Image 1 (cartoon, rainbow, N blue to C red):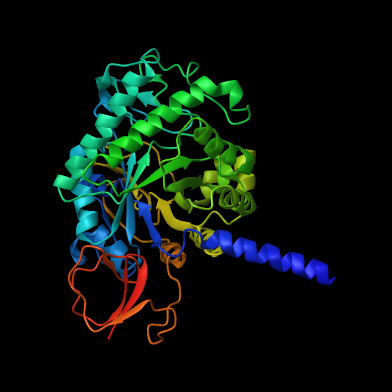
Image 2 (cartoon, helix red, strand yellow):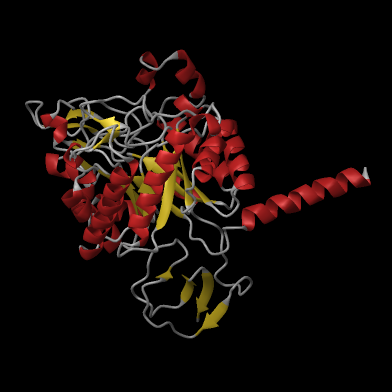
Length: 461
């Protein structure tokens, strides 16, 4: 028995050591992918707060300020596409909501940074949606599946650097850069007109050696993207590598193992998607997180996409297997319980440093009175506001769910105690790297309180 207890204690200490690897000098970020906020605003939509007040008029910068000050978020994620106008030109009409070109993202990114929030830039490297089934080379690049890897990689690098430099010059420097979106099977397979993935698509059930050529190509593209970040005017931005295989711990670990075997390791954050309908139970996700922490203790882990349904009628079009994953009620209350259970689990792992809810601002089609100029073609049913067919004011129907998201970020800190404080000062000099305990940049350093500077807790009194 003593030997068993000693073994268990040894395992417990080992887990603590693993979890402590990246936690000491890292700010936790919590927020959502709010890529559609300006599109809804332009369509004339508005969101109502829990008192029924229009958010755009009531809060200083509308939804951005509301999410920061009321919902308690300190970060936002935004996707960027090369030329989303091809949604119309190339018949991508099923892919509405991909309006995020560089000018769009510059304006939204600046609003995020002006609010003192962290900015995660999700680079799609495409003209339209990318996920595990869609990874198309931008048409303007003039390349296809036969293009030499070196040629395509050079374009990836220059595009990445150019985008980031434009954002920095505009006052929208990203703090995190995601290289591709849900790239579990590779990216930039072919042109949209060609739409063939057979040459470059790989899977995570076969071995690395069986797919070496395809994976090495992918790793070269990732290295090019990373070089583009490091040689940009935001070289310290943390690089995110994103997979949606979180429901399968073996495949997820294979993904990160394979890209490392292919020669890519210059990333800081393992980014995961987690939707119960597709990735299954929380235990699946927890198994994946535990496996990744053991294999990559120096990497942060962030849930860069998650969401749950607020409407029961989605059961009509979910498959049986998808419904089996939805063990929480399909309702605003179910949303809130899902988020409570998810954040509670994630808070057990200090290597998990980020949490983003997918499209919290969703409120309908965003169409005009004639049904034209739609923001979205279909609904995801995972937002927090009431859905409608045309643009109008939308009541907040999932207040409890919205307010639960911040549970991930907030660690109890006793600002009246000096335990765990790395330094005590009487004043602070102005700096761009001073944060409050919620992880937001601080411009006014004249107030007493607890701050975080270079990952250290500093008490000013």
